[in-house]
Image (cartoon, rainbow, N blue to C red):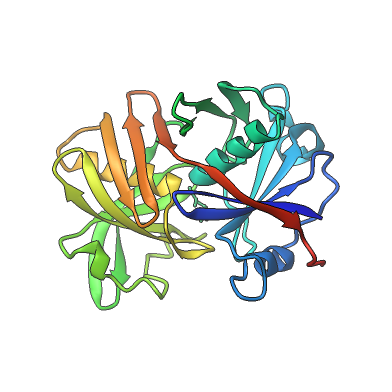
Length: 270
Ligand SMILES: N[C@@H](CCC[C@H](N)C(=O)O)C(=O)O
């Protein structure tokens, strides 16, 4: 089977083209593909398939030809992936499957509008973040309080006093399973002034990653809330680069680079 590999600020994905919806991607296969030693290695898998062939999103087929079927590295299936949809869009453009500069993509979190910027960056309309209150995470023996932000998928974004570069995120941080029964993506960030933050993330289903698009928006929301703001433009620095988040009254936008770096033939089979 043909595959490609791409990343958005080093949040990396294996792309499986499956226009007619003929390929099954069980969790075990996804986990083997994403294995960084025995597989290709990635934070997740993006199956590229026509919306009309996927009953779970069939109602979006009038609005978007292509469905981003995203899987976390452990094979779990989340609602949304912000960097994933930007890399997915890059693939559609490169392959001539969409012309741009604006088009739509179906996701489990709903239809997303994409814009290819003049400098090649890809911007996605991420919808309106929903703040659901506060919660606490534990990293090592340290507790941090943050905002529960719903981006379609769940986030706990915590401003912390300790430098994020010093955190050990090699293990799952603790969280309140009563608030997050399906798990949660945990962002730890240091605000820098009023429009910038340095963020690290431990993703549900993938572990620490070098970037997270939905997490960057959640971080911007939490950072803005520290000064009572709900709108503004934020620069979010992640281990893999820089993302821009715009919060406005009705929605949010995530922008940054997205590139394809390899293509090949997948030898793994179920
Ligand atoms: N890396 C993603 C988020 C992927 C999904 C997440 N791990 C979850 O389980 O909700 C992004 O760029 O948003």
